[in-house]
Length: 125
Image 1 (cartoon, helix red, strand yellow):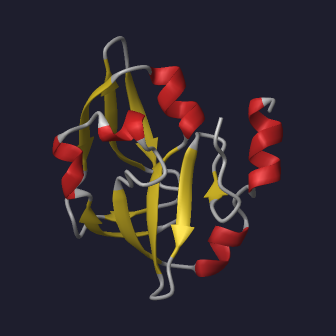
Image 2 (image 1 turned 90 degrees about the horizontal axis):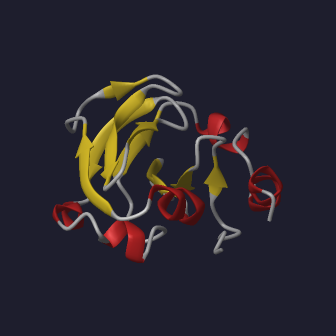
């Protein structure tokens, strides 16, 4: 199971990568996509939507289940990944198949997320 060291993680199995411009990419982890199985559809809230920490920003639909997606931190959605028209990219490469790009309201919140070691411990790796 891949767990990149340069990302932050949530207990809900989302990852976040803070970018230099104060925005961040958000996706689901390798663990999450493997637990969900074949992902067939991703539905996301619209660009411009303001999110509170842990607020749902969409859903991911797999063959057997639908799972909510939660914002790791507060902020505003500024973009959705256009490659998600083919939802299977999330299964193929979960750390490059980001779901949303968001403007982070408080960058200090990102530091409070799990690092790779803590996430490994959470999932029992």
